[in-house]
Length: 385
Image 1 (spheres, rainbow, N blue to C red):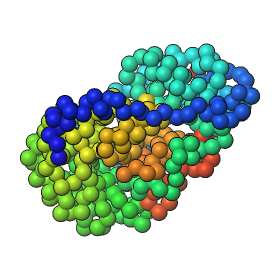
Image 2: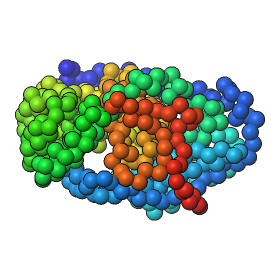
Image 3: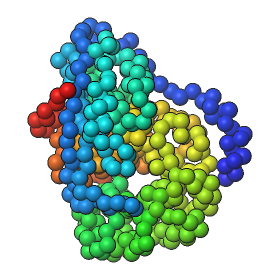
Image 4: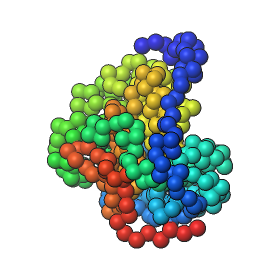
């Protein structure tokens, strides 16, 4: 592997010159948009997701995840979106709603002008990525319904080529609880994801291995502090049937991660180290691939660009999620076909999903053939401004 510093010095100009593909103007492909009239109306609803099990990663635990659901209405159609707000994102229901109140969608006459609309939304304030994703997803859903097509088809993808999704098993001090969670996944999933990064990583893996020999991915969530300890763990994990490692060390320890990636027998993916498109280039040579999450990158528009740019740089690509309803998961599933890994179990971890959309089929999260992102509410949601 090239030394990371040499790579960045020798190829920065070439990488910067790579054109990031953007979607065509769908208004030119269909008469539906230009024949419609009216103004877009944005509304929202706060909602709390109830997890089936206490969810623990390196650093904290939680039993609920707050979200804000969005709806954009136009000429009798409605597009739905979502902002999922785990505490480490730094956004809250109040901050998301405050951001949404600043958006003036009626100033735009045509939902097909998606690039212009989402550039405007992104410019309103820095950060607020999940809030921006809630608008992005709803607008994609609306435009897909206007056009009459699911987004995976507009991306030129085959939904049945989606990779197997991992099913996440959080850190737990009780081996029997770990085994119980593992048994729940058997027969439904072809690969599991294990949260590590604490003092009992080997115990966790051994407990799972007492139940199944399914392939495993591990996510350290920046939990390992020393690169040599991390490398020793990765060699041990490979012997236990682990197939990839996610964010082994702090996002600030990029040179240590680059050393680790060079030495590692397993691919290493960035999670906390990558947020948006501008992060991708600097991670080439430090990671094998990137994990794209809609809540971190502002939604489907930027996720698609990140996917294409990472591919152009020769990096692997994974699509991930937070704890989310089937709304946001269905949006992410539109991009997953053809990627290397998927971690789209977020809606399967909760007991009060309020949308119907994607389906779990033979261990894969498969997008719906309904237009847009393919979702509809399964219960009454009171949206307001």
